[in-house]
Length: 330
Image (tube, rainbow, N blue to C red; front, side, top):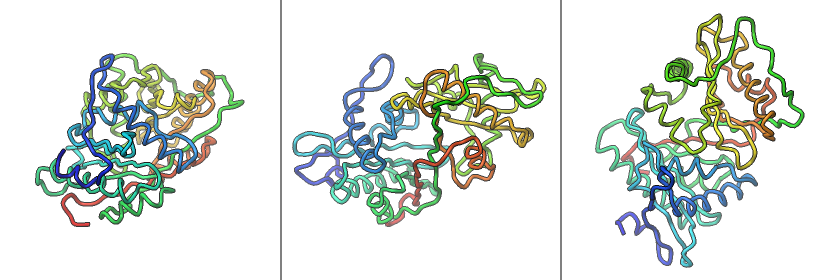
């Protein structure tokens, strides 16, 4: 047991997570145990489980994951009561600390985990200046927000989880704007085009950092819920101008999930983004999905929130993003 682990007081116990290879993916029983905590935390706040097991598994095992820093907290009976997942993004100079606990254990579990995350940030930044810690929390989770702010975090952004019910949604292909067509990004060349459009579309967004194609592809493809058949390009007069990627991360609640939707700056205002969104909704309805959802920066400068609202979506869950400098005192 490390020195930081001693912040969790007996009879509870804090330990590193263990991962094993399962069907070619890093996985294992500790992912299930961590997911129990995340699920119960979600349900207590919003009355449903927002996170999927695969999203958590990928976060724990992703290329940015600092696996040695992950922690699982168990109660006296051996059942999981808290989890800490740490990721290091060298390009953005960020250490992301995602901590959860069972309701009512904020002081005994969440606060120590927040401190452990901050300590991990100091190690992972290797003393380089300019690094920041980042944490996300459901806005309704007042106790968790209070713990983070007491640990020196401050709100910097608010994100909306938006959704639309698909009961009765038209199943036919929506009419395309003039000169616009759609294709699946099935080839290597098409996926590189998709990546290029994504980079240009999101270049001015909060927190955006340019990613090389190989890194971007790994984040989208190396997941058990990846859906490459739902990675689409939109073309205007034969030129690629927009992209949309979807995955199966919300299959557990029978919902489609739009991971990204981007339109090149030169093609905005032509209705292409709204059309791609409608195509995604129609495809989801044809597959029997009850809902489609996505996550958006509520303060983005491209008018995305207004676009989604005009397409029938509404905010269902609010997530606050908080940051603090690495190494600063609380």
